[in-house]
Image (cartoon, rainbow, N blue to C red; front, side, top):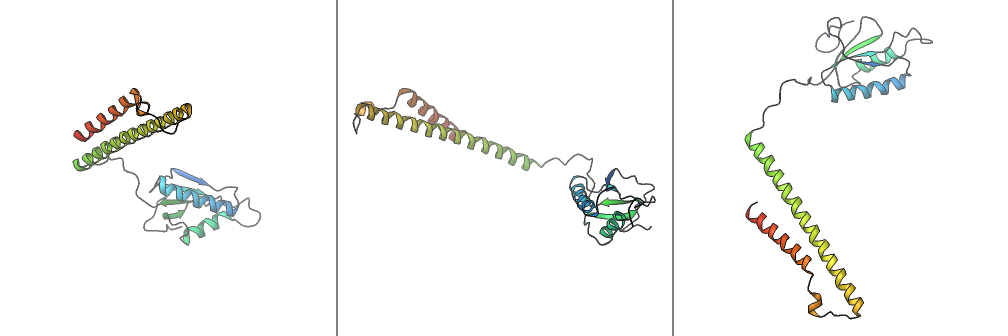
Length: 191
């Protein structure tokens, strides 16, 4: 049978590296499996050659079912990712070529210096944003801790307003605030 598509596949010379075996499936199951496999191959292995095994239908009760169904899908363009196809000489399979470019073995082009600089700047900005978020989270936790401490003192002393000397933050909190302020100042000077 002549090849369908732009040029003959040459089943004798081209070996299909992948196979989709539809043997012993119902027509509906085979159709679903075939469409899913072709979609997956178009994404994972564009440009590959695949052998779709339908069998000749010798064991079918009446007439062959799978081979005519697959041929109709191919002939009517219902498998959009098939670039070329032909029936194999054995009469029980089709050889199809999946559309798309085959993956190249050439190394990727080196990135231009501007792209590398932009990537570095993006990485540095992300790290800076992470450090700032960590400082803000620590400051928020410290403020919550301080509010709880003051509330606890109010309840313990049974007063609404605490004397100023009791409202002063503990030394550990003062040191943590000073360290965060130093980090922010250094980062502002040396971004």
